[in-house]
Length: 158
Image (cartoon, rainbow, N blue to C red; front, side):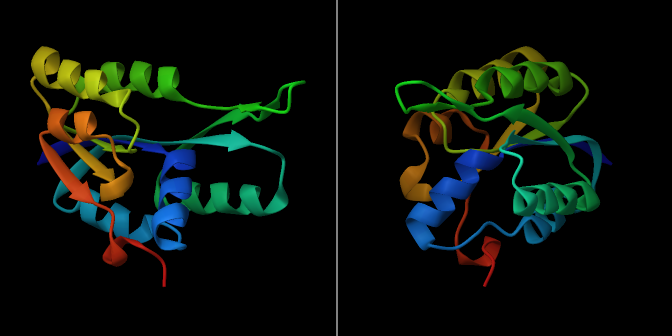
């Protein structure tokens, strides 16, 4: 059976789905699609921890689906800007799990992950499937992926 690792950039998928569709990503439908006829090596959802109760409930739902949830504190800078991305963490885990996987599924539209996708394909000879909102996913990431799955209505909550 094909071995798969799933890496989800929670903030990216949340904001791109809200911006493009005013709807939320359906993690259950995604999980069913991404894991069908596959063995899950690792599934990680990378999120920001603001301490909000609703967010904690959402994180527990992700855990119940099958994700390990990695949290990073939300940092509000003195100038009013915010920091809280997981690019380095996702990249490190992608490299770590690529050699154990036939396919790495990356849920993000962030163009910075184009280099990661290329490296996993060339160095570890695995496929990289990218799920992203079409008009908000970097062209460089779409081109670097072995396969691009557009996040459209069938992967959104009603």
